[in-house]
Amino acid sequence: MKINDLRSLPSEGLIAKLAELRLDAAIENRKIAATGVASKKVKIRDIKRTIAQVLTLLSERGVKV
Image (cartoon, rainbow, N blue to C red; front, side):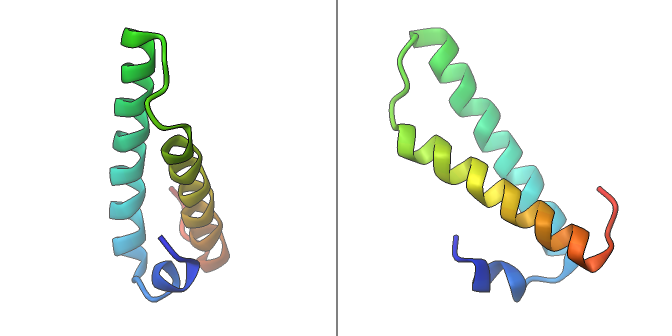
């Protein structure tokens, strides 16, 4: 997701997006643990990057997570 799209979301939307991304990351990690091979490494990297962007935006807004 683009950073400009994330900036347009309200704080509540960012918190919901963060929960969704963390769930996606957990699912991908379980897939790796079960099979021993990452299906798409780019997807995992993008999820982690987006989580970091959301956390940065929330801290800029002063929202505690």
